[in-house]
Figure 1 (cartoon, one colour):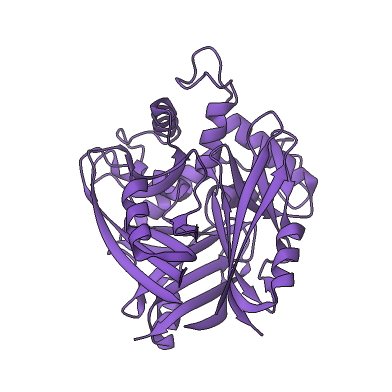
Figure 2 (cartoon, rainbow over the protein chains, first blue to last red):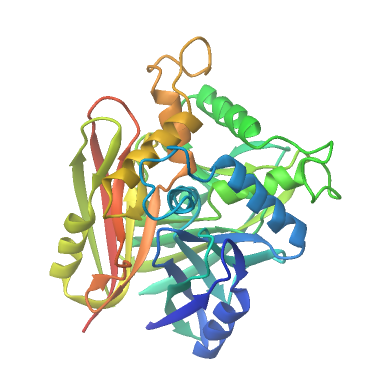
Length: 142
Length: 142
Length: 142
């Protein structure tokens, strides 16, 4: 059994989804682990991870619209935590309702994603940020 | 340390919860892994996993009612992604707010579920579907 | 590769967040696992796990306020499951929308938490409870 660790930095362009499937799968593939378990950890509390439909941009737009309505931005005393801007507290709530971590089984050298599944980093702040993910891979060579 | 992988197919009857605790625990038990980690991965973006109260059907009915109100079905231009039916986009949102993956420690050959915890596949589409789960088990024999 | 298991009991003071970062990290540190994977499992369906900002108490207050509004307490026939009190069904819903499990990579003997990340047990019932968490650690000594 082997372990591999890797840190990747994602530069976001403000609120929205950033596809990371290719970057993650490429790293896994090069480790040549036939069977194992990949864990992705997001080291932030105002960005999170999402597994979602990789085909239609409309799905991602609707997800963004839904979450923005569910968790309204701050201002006018809506949140107690307001000193970091009207988008900071909603970013924490959005992160709490989605995932900070994903663990995906590896078979034949790759994550067992379904045909339509993509992995995304969800930036919840309005401004661009540098986000750090830790990848941990555990498994055996084929 | 050993690894085991298994794929199971769940046939759903449309929107609602399908108990998978017994099927998952039976497979784990037969692997005879004393201590380890089980990961369940749902290979879909319109169905998800849930750990919930296994006793009262009312709890599951209330969960369904709550989520249906929180994420209304489509129609009348509510969602941009509408071509796959009024229940497809809400299914993606419902999946985003729940779990695609669960990892459960194994002790004495079984997942360490609490007394009242059951594992469910949550079908979010209105029509019956065939859903595929991947089980990954890592651990040592007693 | 080694495995370690541990059960910890958290006594809560009713609805709200209980910081468990120090307790979890101390246990991990003493196992002297350089690289590995830590899994935390919450054995309840009316309490859950949360990774959130560890600095501002206002963030935690706003999270609590948001979730209490999103998932109103029972009474007046709001929920079918009412026999365990007006806070039991909302507790199940709140748990369904947050996490029952977290898996965190371990590097240099500690979970790779970001600077601002803390781990919390979220008690969703109004009364104090005893809550049991299972910690599973897998990895190699440095």
